[in-house]
Image (tube, helix red, strand yellow):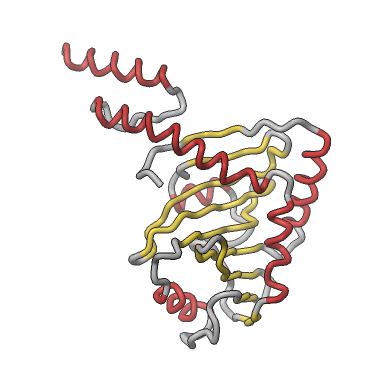
Amino acid sequence: MKQSLLLKKIKKKIETLNPEVIIKNSLVGYAFKANYQSKYSKQYYESATQKYRDGSYIEKILTLGEDFSQLETKQEITYKGLAFGASKKEAQKKLGDPIAEYTFSHTPDYVVFFYKFVLGPYKTKAEIHFYKDKLVLGIYFFDAKQKVTLIAQSLSKKYNSGNSFKQFSNLCLIDSNKNTLLVTHHNFDLCLFYVCRKTPILAQAVQQLKNKIKSEATREKFYLRKIEEDI
């Protein structure tokens, strides 16, 4: 009984230190570790979202594949099995809660979910972007140190009938809905961009981000959903 009361007091004290941390274990060491990681994670994710604030980076993604080698695919392009237009609730049901969720106060309709996945032997950082509660953009970031042969094989099996790609970087896959999967390198990392083009919704999001940032002071809202391993 006394131990239970002590743990409750410790948990309460930790939560007052950082109310954004969700304590999943009442052990003192784990709790403080979670509190320490949250500060680092918050800084990382805040920094990661700055490039999206004015819409210009997303606009670049929309034009990124124009000079790439283009290949049509009969397979519908989806992100982790989620079709473009899927809601945040559908994404959370399929993938679980994100590590972090980021919303811009000047454009609350635009939300970014952050995840970390293990795909085969690879660890990857991932982002899912929603506009008006519809999935419009998905991104994977693979560390350049990782050999990505299996990624190429997996994509070729799904989108190219198992045939090897003539080139794997600067590649643009296009499905029957005009949605695209872009494969490129950015800051030495291999990046996969899953871009919604079936409707102009992503272009509309870019325009709103641009317009709103000119007229309003911005203050982003950051929500730390849960703590996982340090990045």
